[in-house]
Image (cartoon, rainbow, N blue to C red; front, side, top):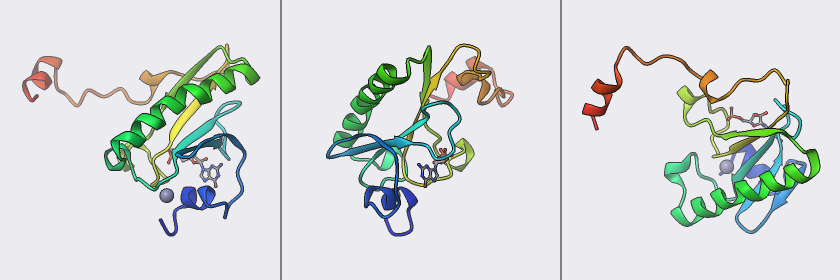
Length: 133
Ligand code: 5GP
Ligand code: ZN
């Protein structure tokens, strides 16, 4: 999509440090790393978020997560990982092209875990929420 920074990376208009690429996905080092080896994995086609991505490509993307993690594991030997993505403005998404953050974790790196993203139950109990489903 015109104006999309990650589409420009896919098209080679902006340089990147690629660590994995196939016909459908590209994984490259984040320009502003929050961890050693912080990588973003994207589908090559423009999709703002997971809901917009063709299901077959979603499968490719998910399988690629493991390939990228294995590459990082071999090279950087992290002690763990956090993997996830920011979906929508409220979820902290800044680049409107779906991207999976792969964050290698190291003992005593000072980071948190998924629970540190948000801690606000909106004033609803689990029993109230399940009734909505
Ligand atoms: P978001 O907040 O949208 O989930 O994260 C966007 C990520 O893309 C950020 O971590 C940011 O550092 C990264 N990023 C933005 N522009 C570029 C770029 O031009 N090159 C690379 N390699 N990463 C970028
Ligand atoms: Zn794009």
